[in-house]
Structure formats: C-alpha cells, structure tokens
Length: 338
Image 1 (cartoon, helix red, strand yellow):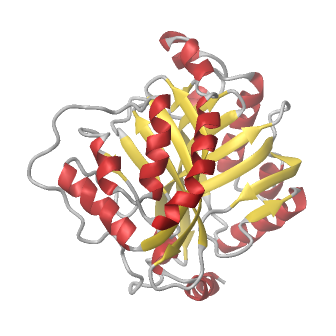
Image 2 (tube, rainbow, N blue to C red; image 1 turned 90 degrees about the vertical axis):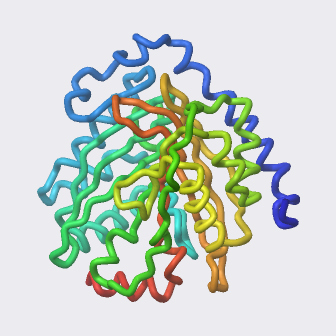
Image 3 (cartoon, rainbow, N blue to C red; image 1 turned 120 degrees about the vertical axis):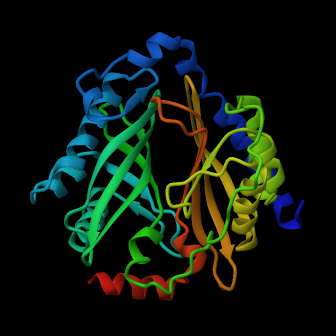
C-alpha cells in the first residue's frame, strides 16, 4: 500500500460502509417487479429502466429525455427545469471550481456548453434507480467543428421529493471531443490489447460486503485486485474505441496504463445503485496526472453486471482528457471551439 493512501482510507472505509446501506430496496422488489415497475410512458424512449421507479424518479427521467430531444432555443429552459433551485453540479476532471452551485450557475454553464456544441443531443440507454438515486446512461452525439462525435455518458443524480435534481455529477470522456481537432493529442490507451486466451468463469456481480476492498484497490492503484475479482467479465472503457477486453492480460494492461499515468489517487466512494443484474459504483475525488503540478478533480462510474439485454459486464466511465492534457492545454482546446 502506498503511504499516501493510509491517512485517507479510514474516512473512505466509513463512507463505503454508509454507502452499502442504500443498496437493499431495489433487490427486495423481486426480479419481475424490478424489470417492469413504474414509468411505463418513458420506457419506449430508452433501452431499459431497472429498479423500482418512484413517481419522482419517473418525473426526472421524463425531463431528462425531453432535454435530450429538444433542439429549439427552449432547450436551456428544458435543462434548467431538471434542477432544484439550490442544486449542485460536480464536474469531474477540472483543476479548479469543480462544483457549480444554484440554478443560475447551472443555467450559465449549459448556455455556454450549448453555444459551443449547439446540436448536442442524446438518448437514454440504461437507467438504474434506487430510491432517490438514479444512474442515467446515455448515448451522446454532437458535431464539433464539422466532426461528428459520439460518446457514452453516465449522469448520476440524487432527487428531491418533487423529482428535481438536488445533486448531480456528469461522467463522460471529453477526449472524444478534441481528438479530431488536435490529432497530436495523446491517446493514453493506444496499443492496449487482449491476450490470446479469454478468461474462464464469470464473476460479474459485486456484493455490498466487497465495497470496502474495492475502494482500497482503487486508492492503492492495485490493478491486480481490481481485475482478479471480475475474472471473466469483459471490460468496456474509454480509449477502447467501442471494443472490449476479455482477457486478464488485456484488462491488467489497461488499468496499469491508467495507474502509470497518475499518482496520489484519492477517490472516495460516492453513490451506489444496485438493481437486478448490475451494481453501479461511483468513485470521486482527486488525483495527480503524470507531468502536471496540480491535482485535478476526478471521478469514475464503475458498472458491474448486465442490464437491459446489452452484453457488457464491467464498464468504466471517466474523462481521460485531463490525464493527457494540463489545464492550459484544455483551455486552448476549448478556444478552438470558440
């Protein structure tokens, strides 16, 4: 264990233990109920909805779907309508001011984003609900300086009683935006490839009693521990261009490439959502990219298991851009959009 991990893990372990207590209700509903309960009107618009969907969660899902489809000037209003007046929005992968507070700050942020990518659009894919917590996976599309880009995202939210978002975090890979504009932008995972023999056996689902060890493995930068527990689970992750890694050799190579690029990993457990077939785990905090002087805020959504009939057992969603570009370079890249 690296020395920098020891001081912080007491807090992390306590947070994980608290996090574990929220994973029960969705399981208790039973498999058939889990697949079909609630929000029938939204289901044709997305790939799948798992977990018991309360009226508040359904309200959010419908608002999110509406924003993804609106292409008129009303879309800023459609986005702001998702949020509560005092909501917070955390943007991973920023060196400064990662937290937006309040409706007006969120309005300014989305207005600025849409001015850069005015045809941004998305459709919901897998959605998992556990009480007030929702993991909304989406397939995003945009035209950036004449280049069509597509990329997955996970929108992790906690809801108020009225179905408004009180706390939101967004996870997606901005590297896909800027690589077409700057071909010299490094591809962190270039050359990572599978071995010759796929894993045997399948261990796709994590139990709540394993989350403490999982948190320790991320913060210890322990690729072997992360991979070993999920023997047999294909890995989908940023930088694989839609492919998957099915061998222990390939998955280890991927995670070791990630950990070789960073140090001082301090990721705390965030939200966990467990539904029939899958567990979503959120890790958020800071790390130090190689060759950079300042910590950046960083987060990962880890999905283990399978929902919605889509074959993918272990999926990571994060932004690789700050791992290969410092804040000055990222500012320059945004300048190209303007």
